[in-house]
Length: 207
Image 1 (tube, helix red, strand yellow):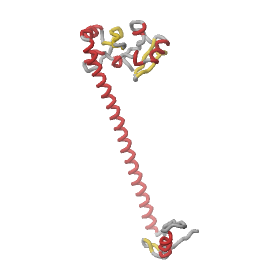
Image 2 (cartoon, helix red, strand yellow):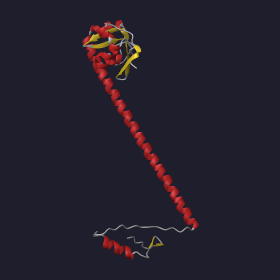
Image 3 (cartoon, rainbow, N blue to C red):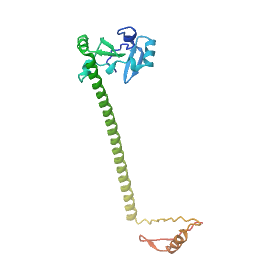
Image 4 (spheres, helix red, strand yellow):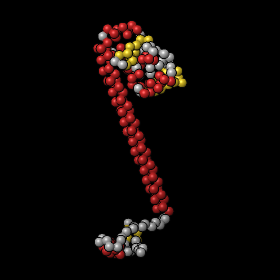
């Protein structure tokens, strides 16, 4: 929410000063919500929000020029280079007007730096959340694997203790015309009756 106190930003250009807006006529821009005194003002704002929205997010321009932020007074304002610039109070406005070009230059530079810092912070937060989620899923996968491996090992142990006989199948896929198939067929034929891992094997041939 912008610290603009519900006033109509378009009115500064059309009426020469602040007019209270209404919640029924609201529009959002750059994360801030603005209220308008008329549907016409709202439509003007929505066509050119960058023109009518107050500079520096509606914060005191003098404060921004000194590297900080402060709330504003709706009647301490100027239209500078076609943009609405607000100050904390009329005394601050007078101090601003002592060297407006230099103050505006400093405020613009500080605001750009502050916006860049906020963007970097958002990127850092997004990367951190992404890495955290990645680590969490890797940990969950590892834990699931350990649990499944333990369950399989326990099942094998119980089968061994109960003397249960087990049968293992080894499949060899061959196809007609394959140069590797004849040697594979001979190997499979020779394997009949041999023992694999202490178990006797037999050959099953499917046409």
